[in-house]
Length: 118
Image (tube, rainbow, N blue to C red; front, side):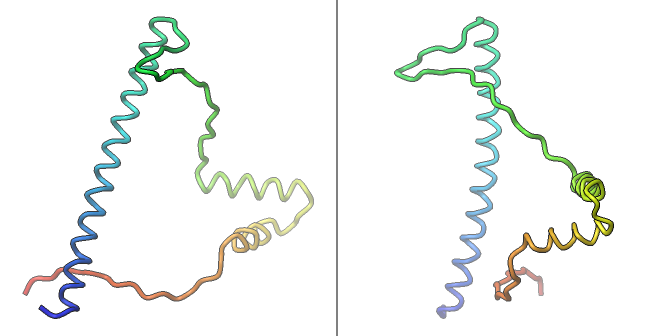
């Protein structure tokens, strides 16, 4: 087996392993959320702010979380704010602002593996 064949085979194996690990991580995160919900409901049911377990303090913490808006709503809200502040060509200004947030495009080469049947 030549060097390139070995490299291609290793790349395929790495990509399969990455996909497997992503699926495993997704499954574990989902299970962690289920366990957190169970612990929270248990503590609320017992009307306790927390508990101790094997040198670990388990507490319920209230955190504020912002829910994302759809892109369309974000853009329309931004245009509305720009117009309220005296910008007549708000859509053009918003487009320039959004473009300025992006970095420069650089060309890169990437290997694409595609299986085919003979």
